Length: 207
Ligand code: ADP
Ligand code: MG
Ligand code: MG
Image 1 (cartoon, rainbow, N blue to C red):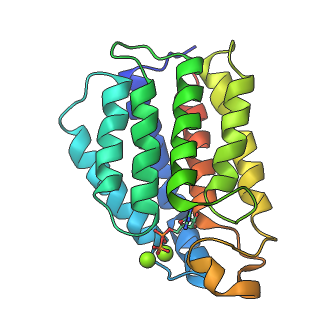
Image 2: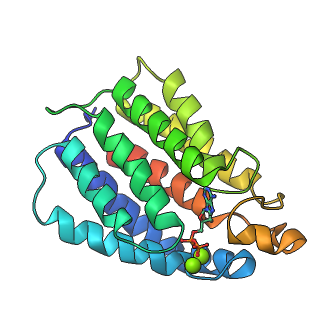
């Protein structure tokens, strides 16, 4: 089974970008229904910047996610800086030398999620990306002792369930909180993007 190294991190981001493209219109529609409709464009812009930065060929998984972080921090919207800080914490938890292990991955996602919550003030149930991140942290923590592919599969399942749970909620953070009941029935696009990210990782680490 694959280890979490530079090549796997690159495959992970490539898979995420490909999955994002298949869901881009849906993500835009979700943000249009409950927000301002720019989430797909914001994420596309960030992932374009990711590709530019990865052209410098970072040599470790840690360096790949540092480049991803810089790209998101350089992108607008609420999601750009929040994902940027999330990826920054992930990068910093990974070792200077490949490969990373599941404990480090779990630590990075935990620290990144804590940072997003500190900056954005969202708790689980507020209908944000946090609703997918927090269950993923728990799943990764429980998966310590397994391999990265198994851990990411568990994280993807948890994040998908968390994203699905946002559909029936009214938002208490972000633009969707401005529209009250209108947001009920609309899945949170940020949470869906987090689920796509972990599912892409599970696939990228498979084999
Ligand atoms: P904007 O509202 O600035 O247009 P984006 O469209 O880039 O932001 O991102 C919207 C997503 O950001 C939402 O789907 C939600 O998941 C996330 N989000 C918004 N506010 C917060 C917050 N305070 N904490 C965590 N995530 C948030
Ligand atoms: Mg938006
Ligand atoms: Mg906006």
